[in-house]
Image 1 (tube, rainbow, N blue to C red):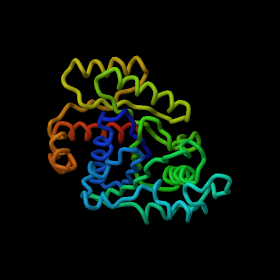
Image 2 (tube, rainbow, N blue to C red):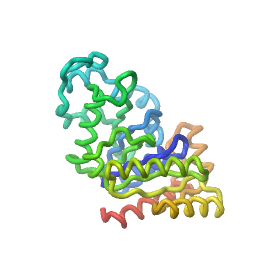
Image 3 (spheres, rainbow, N blue to C red):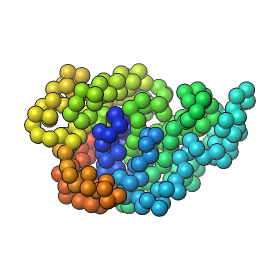
Image 4 (cartoon, rainbow, N blue to C red):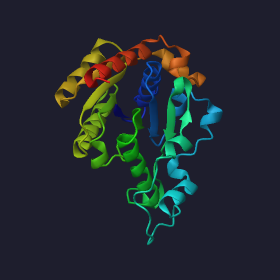
Length: 265
């Protein structure tokens, strides 16, 4: 099962990614989470300790790795030839961090500076790593992404089983889901599902379901607003560790059940 979780900043996609990963791991699945969001914070949602997370260097900023794999140092690519298809089969083993319940985290980061959007060495390396994760590895893959889906190209996105678009009650979030859906169609993602989050009552649930019906996007789960999630963040804990029986965590458990039924894994 390969899935990406996207949405505008602050909607709770990292909470969904981290909690879903932990729940799947407790079911016996081998789970790899890829943090492809520029606001690198998936580690905390997985329950990885801060002193460990602080030492993680995103792959996009690992100059030695980029030079080793592509043959060109970051920032020196102008006018130079570099390997577009480097060997990356060892990256997860060498740079993945194992967290609670055996979930493994790989922090991708984003490409910064003038090369952003071009085929610079760092960008080339990230694209090949994503291809490897989607095509050649056999664990459950959850990619915590920004709304732009920058790491996914057409060829790799076809291998993605599902895109989970996390939405909170509000038109800005609806507009972001609309943009995610267009991007997903452009790169041929097979299935886009909505996950409502931070929902306070029936009126907000109806709002989300109504707009998603308008956009033709099935709603996979509705997660209620939960003070326990906010408290976990204040304490620097994963919601799973702070209160595994909270309403929000139970709703993600329901999301896991929905995905298992829909995709048969």
